[in-house]
View 1 (cartoon, rainbow, N blue to C red):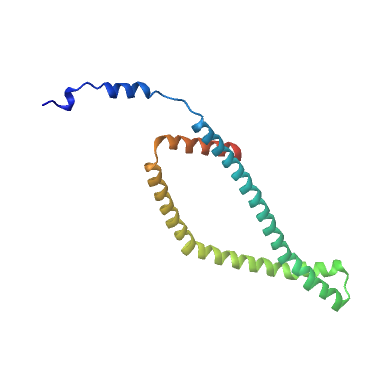
View 2: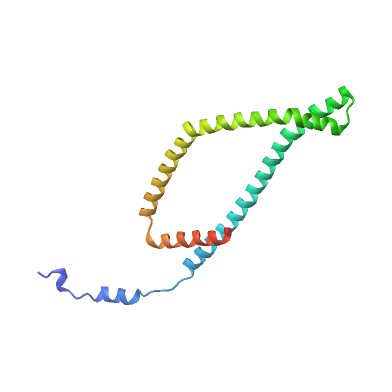
Length: 160
């Protein structure tokens, strides 16, 4: 009776000789396409966020200044036969302090609300997301960690 260990390993040696390192373009192509995707996504997000901020600014301007122009100043001109300059001065001296007071009260309410409810909720959410990120990072295979880090560095170069 012979053991398996007594037999020569001729088949194993042949398979080791056949399995040599074969360089491939696949990792480089994945990195290149990933980097292009990061660059394109960053550009789209930047353009989209700028458009959204511009739209928000226009909406705020029309809500504050447009309502004053259309509703108050035109009515003052019609009712009291004032020039547009005088109507503008009257609204500037009467409505502007009220708008400042309203903004102050609103900001004070938002600060209290965010301090008691919003910030703790955001902190809990961020801790949960960081825990998920650290667990997924620890489970990630080491070559993919290199790809992720290089894509993040490339994304930073794009944003800078």
